[in-house]
Amino acid sequence: MAEKRRTYDVEFREGAVRIVTETGKTIAQVAEDLGIKETTLGSWVARARKSGGDGTLAELEREELARLRRESVEKSKRIKELEMERDVFKRAMALWVK
Image 1 (cartoon, rainbow, N blue to C red):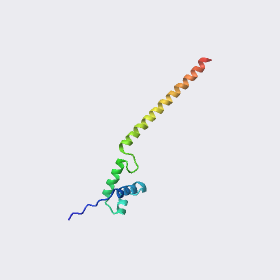
Image 2 (cartoon, rainbow, N blue to C red):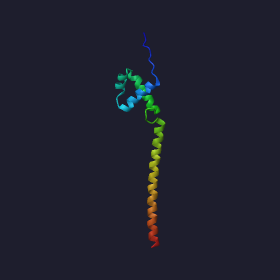
Image 3 (cartoon, helix red, strand yellow):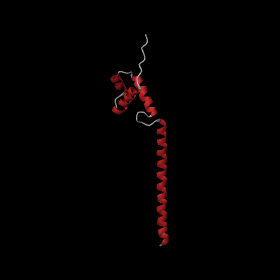
Image 4 (cartoon, helix red, strand yellow):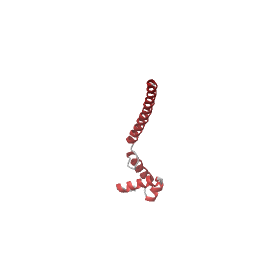
């Protein structure tokens, strides 16, 4: 006879995922401690990581953060260039005035 499928409430699933992410224990250890299958807990953790529900960023958020960081680096480089140009013009003006 086929095994009956167990259902878990949302709080239990979230708690199990939180244990994995916050304690640093492996999925196998937590699954054994809670008496659930490793593949089940693994799918919950993967789903939480993908949606950002485990305290990490979702895929779209990671992409946006990377884009913003690149833009920030580019802008800071441009600011440094402009500051150097300004300093050169200040020195040139000082020499011209003399």
